[in-house]
Length: 82
Image (cartoon, rainbow, N blue to C red; front, side, top):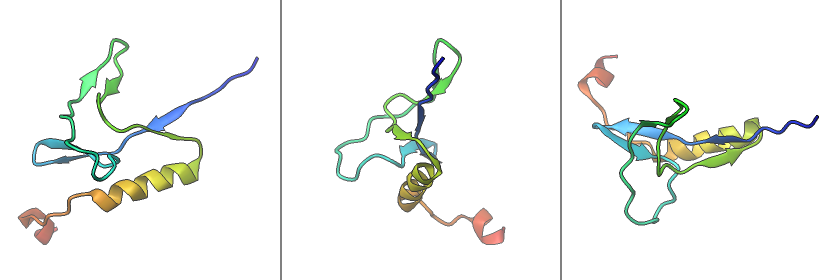
């Protein structure tokens, strides 16, 4: 029999107690509030997060690079001392 696999990913950042969608297109309007939920199967999900389909290592690395460009990188006392 044939088997198929579909892989999707999202990339989020928790910043000052707020989830930020790192893959949301710039200029896409007001971002919806993101909350971590469990679905009926027990899977952890984040409704309204931008989901990107990936099929290989290069796709995954592209998603990571896209998300890293948008991350907040404010310094904290802990960052200075670590």
